[in-house]
Image: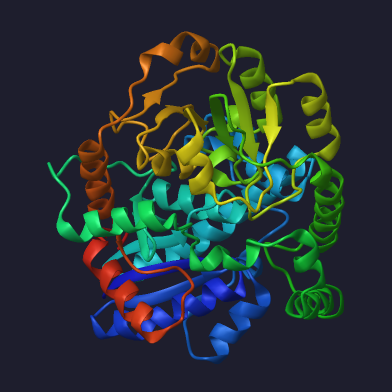
Length: 453
């Protein structure tokens, strides 16, 4: 009986990446198993000789789990991610899907737990019912669950154990070493926008995604797999995905005449728009999911003479309603919508202060000594360098309480961020990255003896 690493994947790129890690992990004496919520990708893994479990094959429409067994306080709130991502309104159907996934994962992890010396589950951070089911079943069975998410630094990632919360940053170091200081100085001087490898193709306009040859080819493949072959996968809402990108293209065209440059001559508060249905909002800070309502509030409580500057997230330009955005611009003369092509670092340099829920821009603002008001759950909330806001209504009374952070304090904190993350990039299949990612995983995973033998 060996230590076993169980990778949970929802799509072909995920399963291919995790499969590429397997040889080095097995060489280190670990067993590797895949749980794949994608019929096509699961079949490829099986054909290549990997051990894989397909939860759809273990699903039973006549059996669903009791959520009371999983210590879930409000299961409907957890469905918020999938509702926002897929624009689904049927909460009952999502809950039933979640229950069926729980049943499947109980069977699979129960089998693996019985035959392994001890077990860990590793998956990319996400809020889909498949990811949630794997997490909650692992928790119920005492199996460590590790969530992977990109770090502040390019080529590094956080590995968070048994929690949906933002990574905690331990104050291990009192100063930044030369390597980290050089990286931070380069970011400041070059104004580098760090884009994780897994997200690079998202950083372009919706029209370019719609007309991309590879995307069109993939669309026809997904339609064929779903309707001709009857294959199942987590991301199977094809029509909704296409219609959203059409709507984003139209929204971006309608908003283009409202785009402005960075304002000069008056101080402004900068609110960087988050990806609308990102886990950071839907699960970690769901009270701020409606960002346009938050912007309306900022415009009403901004100090006299201050503007409120917003910029769409470059990965989803046009994702927010053009009608609501135009209404905000009509009602608030202190609101400025920036062109999404403007470098985020330029905006941060010019801003008087930054209000953010949990965007990485909050940490980037610290590089320029800016005052940061942190509304949600983020890795920098407890850094002592930002002002954490307990409730949105407290924000107006806190304007005068925040301080500009000192460079040496920022560098020290980001040294600790560097140390809290490990080397490797999700879904980068280059040999050098596979070696680094595998080594990082092996050094970070802590195996817990399984209770069921």
